[in-house]
Structure formats: C-alpha cells, structure tokens
Length: 294
Image (cartoon, rainbow, N blue to C red; front, side):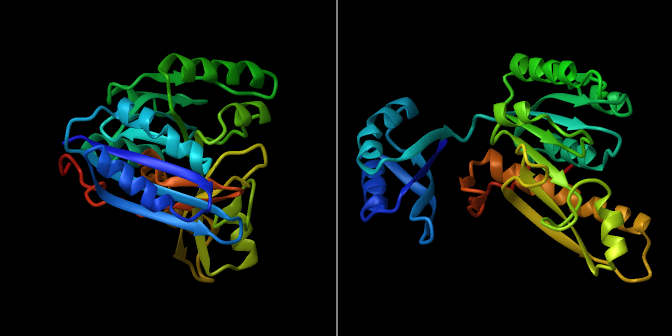
C-alpha cells in the first residue's frame, strides 16, 4: 500500500492536530506515524504525518481537499508520495570518503534516492562514478572562471531536475547567488562540530586548541559560510597524543555518517526550517530498512 506524507508549518493554535486527523480519517486514510513540535518561543507549530489511503483516494485529490484547512490555520503544507525518490546531485573534490559511503548506501537501498549526477572540480573519482552508471561532470573552478563554472553546475541541476545538491566534501565556496537560488536544497558536510572552527582547516584549528572532541556538522548552505541551519552532528574523542593527521583520519567516519543521516532526514521530509534552526523529526518505522545487504 502506497505511503504518503504531509508536512505542516503554521502559527500554533488549538485544534490543528484534531483537524488534520479528522480530515485524513474522513478521506479514508490511516495515520501510520506522526510527529509534532510546538515552539513556545516563536509560536510556530510543526508537524509531519505518514499515512496510507485505504480507499484508493488519489494524493492530488487529498491535497486539493485539504486547502480549506490550510487556509483556516494559515498553513504552509505539502503532500508527498513516499515512493517517489528525490533526485540528488553529489558534488565532491579530492576527499572521497563521503562520496563512496553515499554510493554504497544508495546501491543497497539504505538511501532511497536517485543520484542523477556527480559533479567534481577534479577527475579523481570519474571511474568510480562511471562504474556505478552515474553521469560524471568535471567542472574545474578557478578564481577567474567561477561564475561560468557555477553556471555550468546550474545547467546540470536544471537538466536533471535535481531536488537536492549534496556537497560531499566539495572544497569550493558557493556564491551568494547560487546559495539563494538553491535555498534549502543544498546540504553540506563540515568537518567540525559547529559553531566552532569554521572555514578552512578546522582539524588544524581544533588541534591547536587542544580539543578532546572533534566532530562533523551537516547543514543547509547559505550565503554565510558555515552558518546555515544545522541538520545533524556527531563527535569522536581524541587525546593530546594525536596529530592533526589523526584527526583527519578519525573524522572521516564521523563525516560520512553525519552526512548520510542528514540526507536521510531531508529526503523523508523530516527536516523543517525554524528560523536559523531546524526541527528534525524522528524517522518513521521501517525507513532505515535496506533493499539488500550488500
């Protein structure tokens, strides 16, 4: 049975949950999973509902009929068919651990996405990508050609109909224009536990400060470098005896896992923007299941 999802953002008010539940029941739908959050500081309400149609009602019909409730509560809402895979472009430079991890998770079905292209400013991973039958685009970037390079990147985005761009250790700063054009549709992995150690060489910065924890942060990309709303974070312990090179090696696993979890949350519509922060709802039962083991 096809699973659908409804996401809702609006001002907090009495009766929202009852209205949504009643509407779905009246349209022959069964709620299989539901999460909500009422932000008392901002007065905003957030909700994600997974449901199935037990009477065969079409998603378009359900969405159209929901308009009255949306208008009544001033909702920003969207309905999604969970069987439709999001189209994703991965961008990478010369560190391939996140790319390889994402390719493996995609291959076994742990990340149910359609990887429509991989873009790099180097040729290092062309063979890996092509061997997965995924289009590879090498678009070199210099200070002189950056506007033209970003125009070529956006051409790939438009041609593929990509819904999401993933910066899997893509070591170029995107322009303000591209960040604004793709707002909420670019996810980055930063090799630091933000807000500490932004910008270049964060592992070196961490080493020089003598930290005992290093981490990784996945966030939406904005025009402010490493300031975008945070989706996922994790850490690893280090000691005084370890070098910056050790930090880099230890950080690879953390970066890969954090980025994969952030993408998983985004493609299942579990991430909702709340100002400069995010609301990240728990995963629905069964959403981590893989199609095959390896």
